[in-house]
Length: 160
Image (cartoon, rainbow, N blue to C red; front, side, top):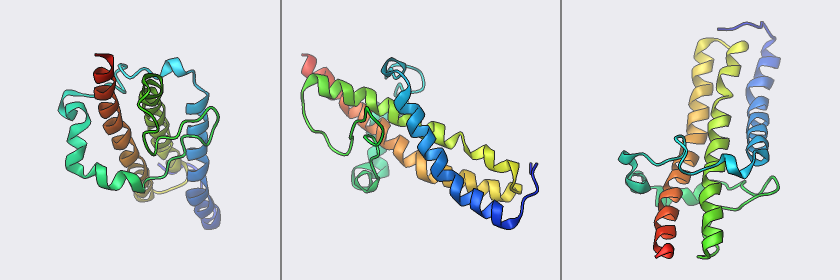
């Protein structure tokens, strides 16, 4: 529901300029939250039965297209690059495992910004904004959940 009547130039500026701000703020907030708030067994992050330990995402071709996604995991300090596995050291794998939760949280938080655009846009423009939020963030969430399943299996192997 459009609340503010703004000039078309301001609406255009907000529609295109606010998304980078939302992405930035979500990443900043996610990086500043305590590491202890990202527990892989929490309900938001825990892989569901239908995900088969992340293997379901292989049917979506995640192994092929995940390399195309950018990695801004180390943009804010303390950061963590997730583009590739750097080590099979247990501590590193555990950090990576938790980092997938932080990254997933950042993408959920970014998508939560979509309703803000209803303040100055018609409903059909809001649908475009929601479409953008989904198109940009869902693939990243899928990769984090896929990686979390793989890391979980690796950590179990290392444990024994």
